[in-house]
Length: 153
Image 1 (cartoon, one colour):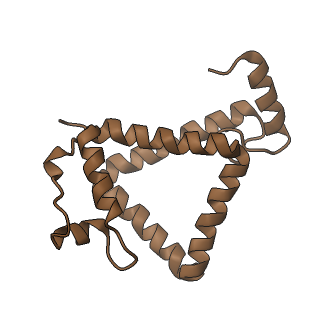
Image 2: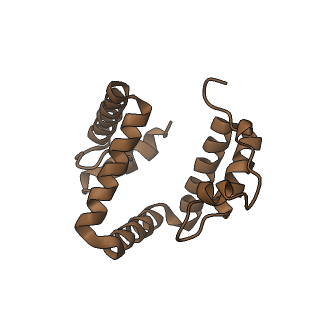
């Protein structure tokens, strides 16, 4: 939790139009951004419960594909690059690297250390033409997916 002084600084930035809370875009104060982010998160969770995890993932995939069709492949890739650069500017290089590290750690906790290592093997096999899973299926390298844990195991 941020200290009172930190919150005051964040609130001042928010009042100047800066987004200081992920998911809080459009909020005119720190509290407003926190409420927006919470509501958006709840809305996403409700939709996920309605569609189920696979349906929700498919919905996101379709949205990405539709955006790619609008922009063309090069435009879509440029958009992703600009988004990453903008986030790096917001967080600073160290903060951006820490964000990536935390994401990797969270994934490792989800699927377990052994599963995370296996996932890395699969990712290392990917090429422009084929995913790591497709290359693994060709028998290029042995991937033991029994090492992947899920939230229920």
